Length: 407
Image (tube, rainbow, N blue to C red; front, side, top):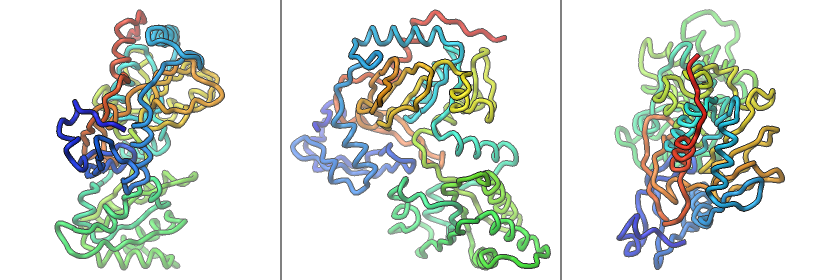
């Protein structure tokens, strides 16, 4: 894979490209080094499997051809067909949003112009976090604070090491810490964290509890010995997921009445934080917001993207996925896909497929880290003819005759 001479004039003289932002997991590491040999990027030398797979796939797919119903097309015809579907849609759903900040902003621009609903693939996690935050607020910290200051990390939920391969080396077992030489003490709450958290809140409040679980007693002891405990939220599954998050947030608030503690919700999604924050900047709300009436209406339950598809309320799916080559979900509605050039389209190709540049590889961009507290710049590494999502969306909006009025 040849590097883009216009992106970095000195790259071919280097032995590696240093301090690259990697957009292929929610940690968004900004210290990736990619070896260069004779002007070729050696992706197989990367020590992170997510980075290796993501960079390698994107660098090997740069010749994208738009498709109409699975057949090769030219760009004008494909865009005209996409515009015809958007102008004729009653309630388009702008979904996926597996991309960087620019991809997410493009989705919100389309929703405002064509009057639709915006949601993200990681719908359940984002909506659950939003519900807790909006109802009662919470006290959260950053990845950097945990790495450098926390002395006790309580793991709530299932581990997510597979989704975040460098989590352990960068956060849980860092080589160096800025404010202490002591390692982070790690405690996992096991398969039933709700009972442990509830019992711990009772013990912390010095209220009577006949038979506290041994795990709750141990947690109380470890909390008493810690100066800065942090509760990290991993995978929460099942019907009790929101209850677990609420109880943990309440426990953190209880502890802060006497001393410091914090919550660390760990995102495993690509682009989910960017989708939420760009929506909040755009209209004051975020995901699961409808702009069909010309003004924003957020409903975390009613505007669930999958539900809108399943019950037929949405009549067009616009799927954006520039960081993943996984196929869009199957549905009865026609689909317009702004996708990774290596995307697998399955047995039922979309009505229109528009291959676009991968941020951090084919073009520069920006992406939010999984804790939502840092926007990491991405460099373009390879010259190519792939358009970016924003360019195509601007053309569609300019040529549209549809009018969405407030009512």
